Image 1: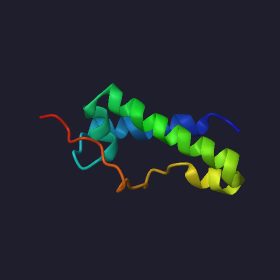
Image 2: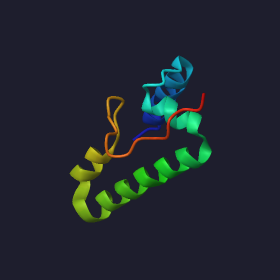
Image 3: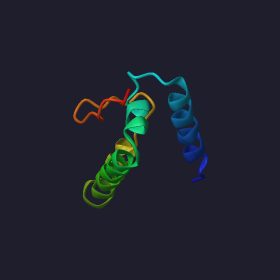
Length: 81
């Protein structure tokens, strides 16, 4: 396994921030600030850890977010004007 996925993730994040689309979950999370980003990263890390320990490899793979993931269960705060 390489860190190529991390480079791809970074590129997607940078692109969404650059676009500045208020409909983008990534952009709204970014504009909400570090505490909101940290909360989301922690949430995803816990979900991945639980999947790895209790639910097996396939569930861990499924837990990996994709660029088309939608977040309807928890939405970030609205972007500041």
